[in-house]
Length: 151
Image (cartoon, rainbow, N blue to C red; front, side, top):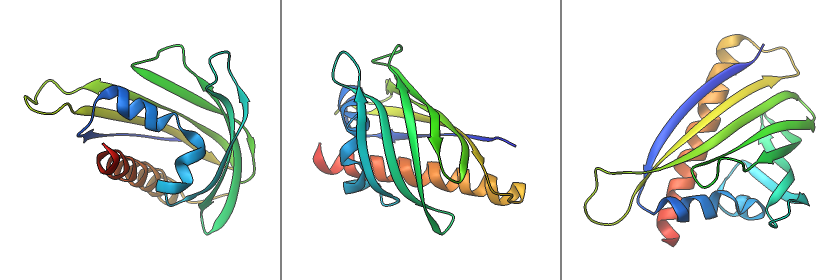
């Protein structure tokens, strides 16, 4: 069964800067604590990661998976879908970037993160939902911290 979750966070940086950081997949291990390795294995015609292989810590194990990215909604959004991996059947999602109109000073952005996860091992629904929320919450907080520290 697929579990879905959505979260958003406000980041003190421009939407363009947030997008640039989110698209720099090979640097994810520098700031996303659960991502142990990220390797672009295929690029699109503009040099962006079309397929990216990740190794991450999840469920007390090392998990490997490959995602394929869709940039058709740039610069406002990009999405991905699961290609293959271990311990997962699905890991589809998107990042959406909206300039925050409520700020007068420095630019800020509302970043929306949607995720659909299906694990290949049987887990109680509550555990899967909590894991999806934890993944998202941690990812957004770490993205915010990284972007604001380099902005």
